[in-house]
Length: 94
Length: 329
Image 1 (cartoon, each protein chain N blue to C red):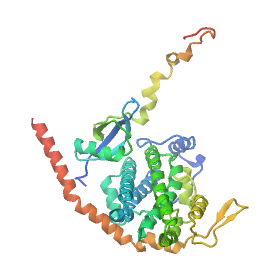
Image 2 (image 1 turned 30 degrees about the vertical axis):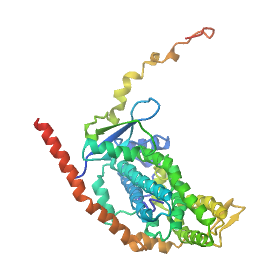
Image 3 (image 1 turned 90 degrees about the vertical axis):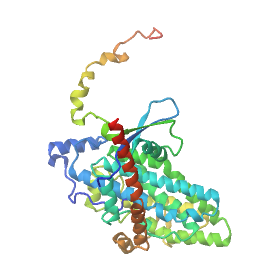
């Protein structure tokens, strides 16, 4: 068990100029093998133009149990959305 | 199906009012269609059942490579060989997506492999049948992958996020598998008399094991009731089996082949085809390890794992050495 290959998270950037997106994970001994395996496991049908691999243990994640207080500051700022400001219907370009 | 007899908690489903507040909040999230993510609180039974189900599914993908891999070197043309190779490679990929989904629940990959190799974990009974001739490869794609799709499409909506995402990826790739199988069947069924006989023979042998893939009737099973409440099972085994029969009978007719069950007949009243249940004694024997190829499959799997040990360890030693050198700089 001690020799199990570490876990890597895989991110792929697709064709249409979107950002890299998490697609899954895999086990690999090092970054080089992780990249090659990611190509085989996650891009068999031309899904990607670029791959990132990151060791899973290097990712710091927010905790689901704290999601209330963590995201609370954005809850009461409805004025950040343009629909907060009613505009006269006859105006254009706003 | 790929996970045929998953035991859950062994308790009947509890009503919301009888649950502790934490469990009740969890069940309400599921009822509302929210996804559960790995770090969220979940009942121990949910976690255990999911590990069992996802890992059975993963093991089935991995062992499922063996009966088809058997024909890669003997495919009739280079094109068929390339296609089969791509299909078998997909199965490996599907196994890997699913193992990763299971690992998010706190079980390690090595533990999962150990459970498979020791016989503690199950995989689908279908892969314990032999692939005797090229038409069998057609029948496997058409029937086995067809049955798998039937089960996997609803599972895209399962409540556990990583499982659902793995199923979405798998479903995108799966219809290639079924079509390449049917394509082989068309070639055989519309070919020479001898080819047609092979196609019929393959259907005869794979029909019953394909029906068994959905597992025995579970309309009265407490395990299934709990799994359905948790939305890790979306349909009963009988519902899916009926759907499979309804879909497959016209496909067989198109090929000019006969389903090896004289009771297969359209039932106007039910709006479904009637059919005979497979021999469940045979199913239980295969699950117990007494199918035609159980031993061969596990021997091949364990041999591949053991023969690859020096390679896995070598790469790991190389990576550790490179790390140490980097740290020393």
